[in-house]
Image (cartoon, rainbow, N blue to C red; front, side, top):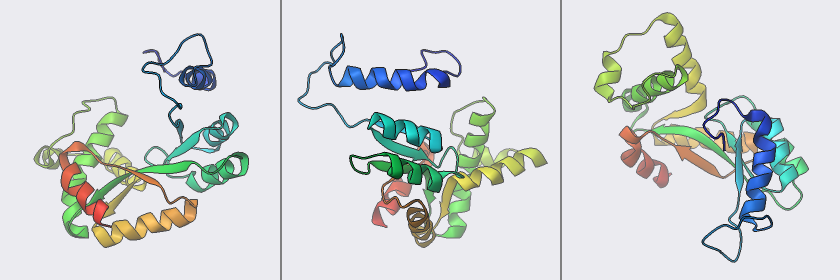
Length: 195
């Protein structure tokens, strides 16, 4: 929706409205293949303004805890208060689930390095655990990695389950999209699925 241009945030409401029109076949352009019903549409956001917009447009809302871990409760409250047709919201978070709390720290270093690189517009390739461990970091980078941990749940199965339940209660949201990076996703996802 950004058409390859930098920050198009001011245009987002209009573009989302255009997408809704397109998917509902109400405009001059039709979606193909044609389906009986339009798909459920969700808007990813990270605060109250995006929650208000989703509610106003009558679409679902996904709170991006993995983007901003500080506004989930308020965003979900805003969406619930403004959306009249039912409650269609989720939250999305980075989750790394190891066999134990101690073992998962080794897995998490890959995520830490990848996220730091993404934020700095560096190599967005996911480093191996060995590559990530071999890097050295200055104090500012170490501080940023610790800050980024607020955007994640990292631990063994008991810790991950406990933290997801805590956030579910805080946000009043039981539907989660658990995001993980490719290097650790297969075992990670099966552990999460067992919770």
